[in-house]
Image (cartoon, rainbow, N blue to C red):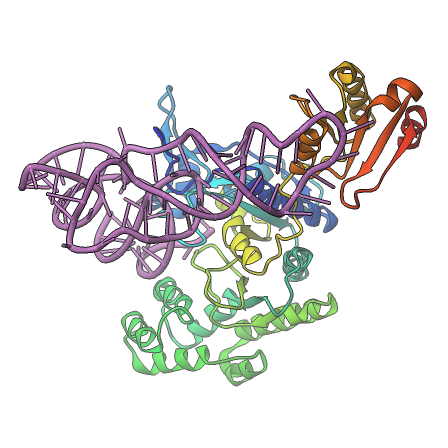
Length: 429
RNA sequence: GUGAGUGUAGCUCAGUUGGUUAGAGCAUCGGAUUGUGGUUCCGAGGGUCGCGGGUUCGAGUCCCGUCUCUCACCCCA
């Protein structure tokens, strides 16, 4: 083979395409039934737009290039900046709440590994203009609605939920300076990913004071919302954050997805822009990276030059999800073949033109119909019919010449019977 | 970007301490079968052994480089 595919990309042969469509079609279907409207943007944007939020170092993770007018551009690594740009442009005319979704194809120049490629699809849903954590609950509901629709249950996946606002308030209460907050977030995020000893060392590097460190360790051992009461002395901000989480979990219970959701103080999310509720969705085997994640980012529009309007949302990629669905055998109902309804075969070359007419009529009537280019022995044509997984065969033979009849053969039972051509087509409609 | 492992037919893999013309199963195509398929039988095509150097009389096998894929780190929007 002369030219190989590019590192981290995938070829979608029909059987792979069937799986990709299964995933993406369901994303769209579930979004729509949850009240979200689809949008999309260009596949490349100004490089500066991506640097705005994440700084210059992001450039090494992007596929960037210059066009002939020396514009510095980049292939989109995420769609959220595009969303912010589009919403800002029409913010005064869009009815709120804005509930939008998209299934963009994204590229990131990272080294591929399990569940992460350089080109992938990511489902994004966002709700803009709602302060109430009901919007966060609805985003989580929509994600769970999707996962259930694929056949996954609360035995397979879990949504781990926490609050940036809560952690910020508590860390402030512990006396940790605002400047050091980002670094501590980074360490907390590692809690469930590294051995306890390593975690301890990382925390030591981030927080020099051992008393403060002890309080953080105490906090990280909290397993339920109720245990947070022991930090009640931490002031109004912390109390508000706890109340918000309680309210969220109440909504989740009312919506009937409580068994999918857990409070988990260790969920921080890497990025700086989250401001409130945050969550990540995991496969319960814990062997994979997150299936998806999201949360509240109330500064999103403002960061991109718009008004300060609250927003919450989530993203889910197709790579990890695909691995999970494959492992659980949930792709099994997907047909990789064409599922031809009628395969028309002809007993003699003199009937070829009549066969083509039948095919055309069947197709215009909306049936998936096909036939053999080569013709030849009836047995050969039926073999081809089996190869394309045809449900039924239409046999055009002597009966057609003599009585205008065709034979309909059911390919799974083997049963067959003659039928008048006119009657056959009138039944189709 | 750093580190480790890997690579033989479309797929899954054999291939002896380096020794003739590199094999099998599955898949594909053809035939048995000119009015009856999917399960049977027979046959065929398909490989510059990832690519490039080197050692050797001789390399799929040993050495170096490079690329891919896999796994971990960085990062994870």
